[in-house]
Image (cartoon, rainbow, N blue to C red; front, side, top):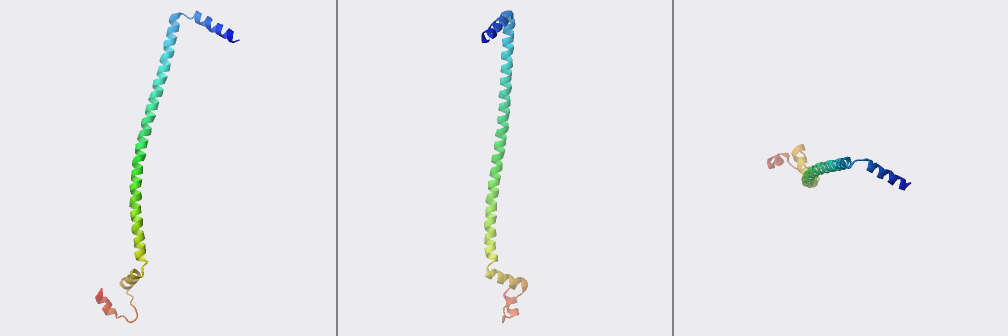
Length: 115
């Protein structure tokens, strides 16, 4: 069977004039070259897109890292403020200042003069 197929191909080639065979070969090479050029173009375009995306992500990472630093500083400030606000001295000072509270036996007039 394989032998018969080879014979058919040989007969077909014999029937095609040499000039037409060259044209067909050139056309085939041109189509293959065109496909390769298109594939290379698409690959280059996709590569450029990925490079732009990578650059964008790198900038975003830098912004987020900066934001993390700022939020870390803010977090530390809030922790210090929390410690300050929960101290007995702060609570006492706020009670005296905002609520006007005094200890038993303290004179209100003297306290007002201090402030």
